[in-house]
Length: 152
Length: 314
Image (tube, rainbow over all chains, first blue to last red; front, side, top):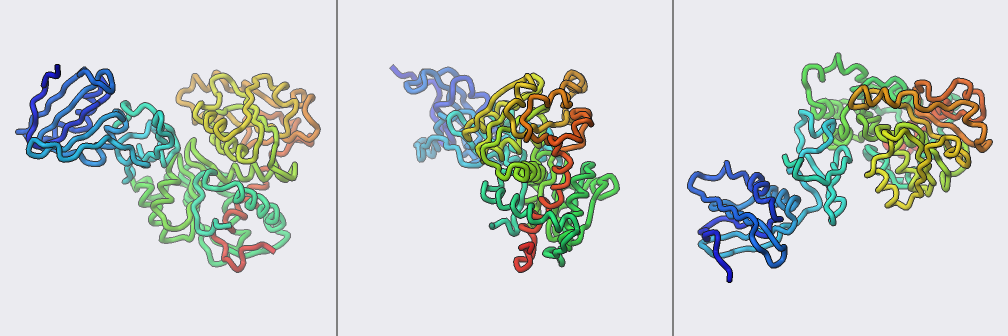
């Protein structure tokens, strides 16, 4: 029997099928501190999932994610799905998708990279391998595999 | 050849065909580099030398190449006396040079700086070394020296000796040699081995990699012994440097079992890695390698910037 553990939201975003244990990282990407004060944020940790075994879920009221935030979530939780809710109905549901280039989402792990100096540029990585995901800094060619540690 | 107007930031920006053409063009440039013939394909061109890190030989060989091609140089050789000291970003400095020159040659201590410069400028940018990153013209002159010695770049057995971890020249060279089907023998102190990511890429390209710490065994069937300097400034801490400083040295005794045609290369300056007694043997090719810096850079500048009518050195 399924049990509803999080109440529905009227308008906002549901991020489902998050890799078990990564909901708090997703919340950090969502940037809950920037939400308006009347928005509710619900987090479900360690929820049973048919596909994943266990998963996390995040629901955020009155917010839709920017493409940049979706890319960041795609990096750390590639199985996640994003649903846009309007007036209690799912208007759009899609899996996160990794683009060819990831801009402004990660810091380059190479401290000597020009993107870590005071230059007017954003970090930029090319997806050089998809399974598992490997990114390569477009500027210094350093590879990144551990994305959590390098979220901007 | 479609290098005209292009940036050369990494050796990966060049195809195998383009590398072969540049090496062949460099060979034709030798009499011009020696001053025995005269050519002026850069006659009305100004090349900015933006050197934000000390580098005498790279800067002087680029300047010599520009002059030999009939062009003119404007130079930042001491960033301490330039606008950088006033806090100007590299991005802004490059935009300024973009307005003053037809091409920019950049040496900078930060990896990725040349890629940034390429974006900030609509004039061609040549990377003359970005920190521990890329140094494509060094790779080109390494290849030109091998090609001159063996008449080909295909199928050589090349020993890479020394700092394979931080040495920027080695990673670019290994990549380029992979394009030519070389067999690479890696010989380094345990803490300075080739990084896994570089090794993975090379293996993915189909290179045969052999690890051999015993130097005499490594060079036994080798065509080229490429010796690197252990660069103190690239080490994160002094103690790591001290553990490996002076851990290898090439002298005549080491070379006893080598093939007669083996050539020894070194990007110079050397710091004790090669004994002076080797200089007078037929194996020593590092001074020839240093000389070829000028014709190789002439070939590249000519391809990127030369007037199409005059680009071909006759």
